[in-house]
Amino acid sequence: MVIILGIDPGFATVGFGVVSDDAGRLAAMEYGCVTTKKTDGDASIRLGTIYQGITSLIKQYTPAGMAVERLFFARNTTSALQVSEARGVILLAAVHQGIPVIEYTPNQVKIAITGSGKADKRQVQEMITRLLRLQEIPRPDDAADGLSLAVCHLNSTRGLR
Amino acid sequence: MVIILGIDPGFATVGFGVVSDDAGRLAAMEYGCVTTKKTDGDASIRLGTIYQGITSLIKQYTPAGMAVERLFFARNTTSALQVSEARGVILLAAVHQGIPVIEYTPNQVKIAITGSGKADKRQVQEMITRLLRLQEIPRPDDAADGLSLAVCHLNSTRGLR
Image (cartoon, rainbow over all chains, first blue to last red; front, top):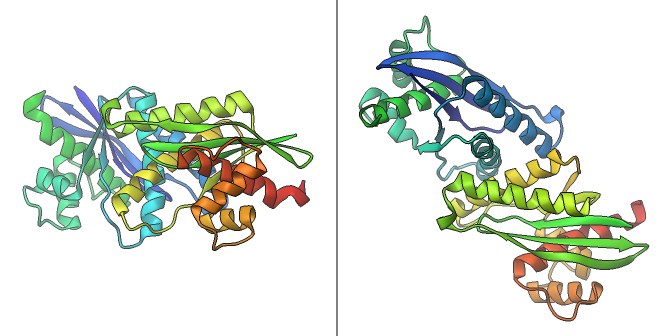
């Protein structure tokens, strides 16, 4: 069995999904969000919370790797810089726990899950729900994205394992 | 005596300067760069090197705080995202060692050191060299910027200590 931790990086909300692959049978072990608020303290405190949350997940599930969304140019640059700071501590948590990081673009995720780069968010979420045999579409979107990243990696590497 | 660690964030090169203030007499205790190369490994490995380098400096000098340059919109957005990832692990190193982080814009640094927001890089460096009674302008620029951040904080807070 292979376990992968999928991460949708963010500063206020980091979505995550832990997915196991047992001979092609996928299962969601856990999904949700690590959240931080302005009232928690300054940026460094919030980054500490994110690092701690991701470190705890890795320790709990000992995944074989972390699949993380790769950022591109964003319209709201200030927000992109903040998300990148969060991404920095998320990658650091992986390296400190000794697990490899694999990056995927949003398009790679869509293709790996639906077979098409033109799928919309809803279609990806419905496919994830079916693949993982969940009762309903995972909420919030960030958690669904975390699951999508993990499934993307498992689907992309199945022939290679 | 107050010791401040000044940081000019970067991904390939993080400039730093450790400056002490003994009743208004400033002295450079150390300055230089933490560097990473593409050949070191992927982004997470390089972020680990940066975190480790900054953590070592904090442990060695036990500064009262870290003064870090605040990033704004950059033309080269991909580079800005990478620098932000580095910034994330630098801030995390501070919070893990229990020291406060203070952020300054490039303009605040210029004003605190030369008295003018219109000073160019060379003028700031010459002033830093004089204030710290160095034999020559500190090299490379990133290290000089690290010293500038530390001096900026010490000059800005002198009346408050």
